[in-house]
Length: 176
Image (cartoon, rainbow, N blue to C red; front, top):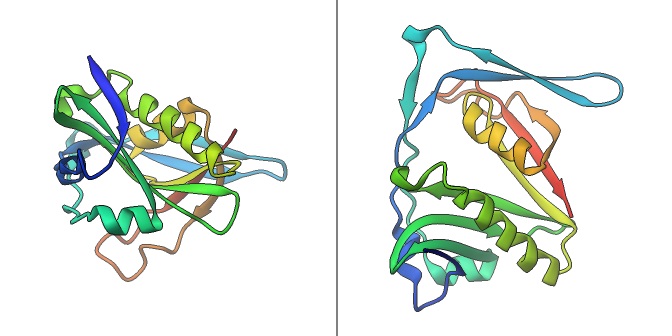
């Protein structure tokens, strides 16, 4: 049975959960009409499908606790999921990292991590969550949308002058 718990000094080994590859198979094309944001999934040709692994972080519990908090998913004592949250001056708590070990994906652990975060965020008087998803990480973007996040913006310039030029960040908001 998987346990969802806030990261403390007793279980801080969860902060070392490794990033694993995920599949890039499409682009999320985001547009805005006068009334609301819309999106379309634009699948890539089979020969363009690839995988990506984010660089490893070097999380420290003291820093995370100063900036926000972390929640882990545990199978017995083994960390299998991690969500990092950062305090914001506005009414949305920022989800800065969310990862699930590959063999535990598609078991609703990311949903459980976010549900726990909502409880903790409400206790801190937040009105919702916010996060970003890269436009080429469609699986993550669709997960956020299925959880109930709404698209609240699009950053088309963030990757200019980087090796990731051409990607966009989709801004997501979830209201309690």
